[in-house]
Amino acid sequence: MSTRKEGVYWIFAERCGLNDIPGSSSYDSYMKSLLICANGDNELTQAERDWIVGYASALGAPDQVVEKLKTYPADEADEDIDSVISRDAAANASRRYLVYDAIRACSADGEYSSGERETVTKMAAKVGVDAEIVKQIEEICTEEAKLREKRLALLFPTGSPL
Amino acid sequence: MSTRKEGVYWIFAERCGLNDIPGSSSYDSYMKSLLICANGDNELTQAERDWIVGYASALGAPDQVVEKLKTYPADEADEDIDSVISRDAAANASRRYLVYDAIRACSADGEYSSGERETVTKMAAKVGVDAEIVKQIEEICTEEAKLREKRLALLFPTGSPL
Image (tube, rainbow over all chains, first blue to last red; front, side, top):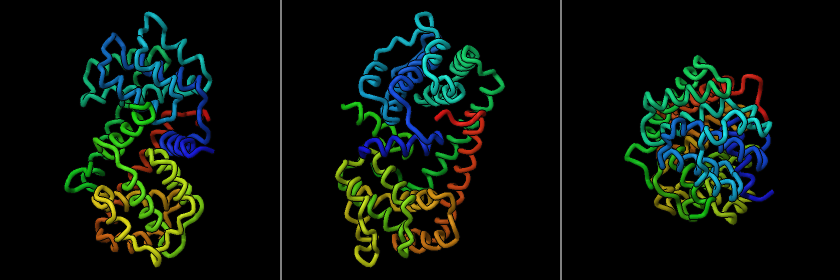
């Protein structure tokens, strides 16, 4: 196995509890759906797109998939989210994970606004994730963000070294 | 920037709150120290070493650094942890982070035993992280592990797709 691949296995196990890594079509389907979900009514900021592009790269998406994400229109009118995520079995089985990642992407510019919340809830409904589940996912995101702050304050008491 | 590098920036920002990525000598110094810390009294299991190797790869360590970690003896009698972590400024400023990562590595085979806890506490003292701080870091690791379980149960209600 290439050293790169060892890291991809590591991050999927650590982050998502997966024992295998996705194929190229899973990345393509999932990451495009994530862009559509975060875009909602064409509100995607550059910081949010950059977050998704960086995330795809960190997860080991093939270079050509990552490159496509940089300019993918992510327009629901053009390609609807339900059919994009349905294209691949592993992506299709990760619909709630998509909502979680969309919330994190929408928080990438510092704030998860009430407008973004509305958009995510609307897009979540399109992939069959109802508002009550979205709320539970949001709560987990909030808990994680707080715990991350607490952890970094403890681990880097005099500020981050880089 | 290569697509690979975009992912490395992403993971350091996301995970560690860093705005830049380390150089090769930082990876070398930090990851060797992590192996020494987790090894303690020569108790490092293969699962723990694999975790550290995968982690280094996920963080974008150069291939030759990752390869070296696979066989690095990690023996405190041979190279003492304080001098290994002191070799690089960014690694040197990440001593508490090292303890956090050592606890995660020691949990890689499912359990963070009382023996491992003793070892980590002893090695932490050698890099100037006192027992009270180790305890606080352990508490954060426990909270994170619980939150991760809760998140994955919510996001993959019928089990992981891969």
